[in-house]
Amino acid sequence: MTFRLDGKSFRKFLGLLGVFLMLGTAACQPKHTPSISPRSQNETRPNILLFVADALGPELGAYGDRAALTPNIDALAREGVTYVNAYGASGSSGAAWAAMLTGMYPQTLGVIQDWNGPRGWNVAPQPEVKAFPELLRRAGYFTFRVGPKNDPFGGTSGLWDDDERGAGVTWPSIDVPQPFLGVIEATTLPLDDKDAPKPKKKGFFENLFAKKEKPVAPPSIDAARIVAPPYLPDTPAVRAALKARYQRIALLDRQVGEAVARLKQTGALSNTIIIVTARTGAPWPRGERTLYDSGVRTPLIVRYPDGRGRGSVNRALFSGVDLSPSIVSLARQRPMAWVQGRDRLSARPAPPASFAFSIQNRVGAVFERARAVRDGRYLFILNATPKTRLWDLARRGDLYDAVQGQGGAAPSLGPNQTNPRAEIELYDLRADPAQMRNLAADAGHVSDVQRLRAALIAFNGMTPDLSFDSTSDLRDRYQPAGQTPVTAPPVLRLVGNRVVMEALTPGSTIEWRLRETDRWTLYRGPVPLPKGGKLQAKSSRYGFTDSDPQLFDARKEKRK
Image (cartoon, rainbow, N blue to C red; front, side, top):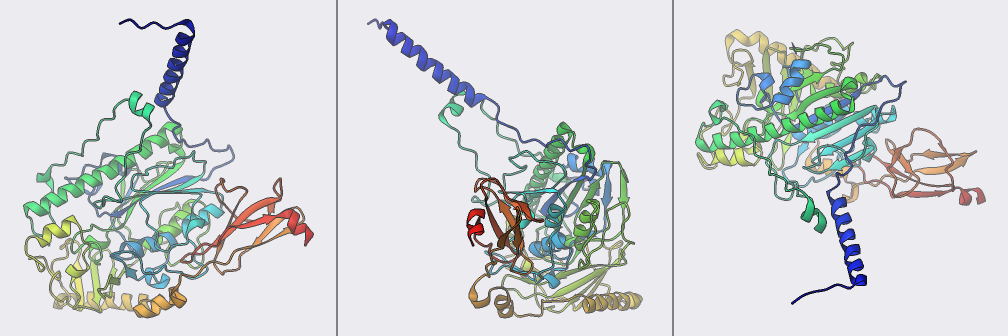
């Protein structure tokens, strides 16, 4: 049977074929790749790119871990400064991150409850407290954040010009102007199915014409090189969980490498300070949520564009509360007077600290209260709740399951995990890096106990502490009448040809935009009256619900 097309039908066929080919070609065209915009000639302030892992100890090649596959982070260490005595202000992730953002201790902020599930309430810190991204945004920096959702307060929209949340988001989807502050949050924890990045759905023509993407092979980790902590059982199950963890750390390292490559390609590397750190230590039993080195010791690597300190190791004490004033100083701004931390990273840092302090409070329904001080040689811990078992504080996950499988609910573990703790603990960090031998009762260390106890008492005396409040008191403080407070909308008025905005809720931040499709702009002073005379504004306050956007119409204002 023969098919024949007349001239008209043939022309229709060619037309349809042309449309089909054009659609296919369009589907195969490379999409816009977000870039970094050139900086103005007069701009001399550095960009700052901060990588923050959720739970990562010194499990990096730069810190001597032979099992770690971290060539990109190790390269930053060779080109920058490696801090080997950096400690989180808390062993709890949210509390540690709150301290890093604000330069304030968690007990002063009121971030003293670690949640195993959904957060019971938002914490509203003191009205004057502002996180470093908002301070830099006020100074003219473009601020962005990408990665899993990790917000210790709620009501923090004023921190970011661009906030893209999700485990698979590794860089903003828009072009980034300079100078910028970028915060890339990354996880070393196993992802639940609901949190794992989903493959992007493709259209018909994309599926038809696009090249097939090869699945990314998991990093090859030599399990024989892994050294299990001495307080965990060295079993096949634990070793398998540790191998999976090192693979996730290697993926984090790839993410760092991709970001550095982007900086190189756009010429921004020569103007960017790169910082790699973490909120807490490793997420295994007797790690995160404790005050041992395994719980609060974090990596800190800083690469300066001018090569400052290239390849050096810094042994000075660094606390999580020091991050905020350090970043503010690196951006050539003056740290706020209320911060409790000090600048440790700029060209003119504060004098070295004599001590680093950390705190641990409640985890879920488990009541915990402990305080720690380090002087670089010794770790001193004061346990107000010694009967709380460390095992009950541990994060649930693959490492927890692997350990629990060796001995049921009370597996055979290192000291203090399943038994009551001593009220006082003292460890020699040089001779006993895993903190396995408590020296507090040793006659040869009486003076060390007295000296460090005095330092901790002095710290407690000058550091406001909300952790004495009961759970019901905290709930009433942050959820009066059982509801999260709502930020009052800003008051807008026309003064000459400018729109003046006033915040009514103490500590609130105002943002405005011309259209609903625009990004919010931080209010820093009177706004020239836009063409058309209309704009929107809203207020936000840490720990509160944002106000509804307010529509300002200059024509209606003039009729009043």
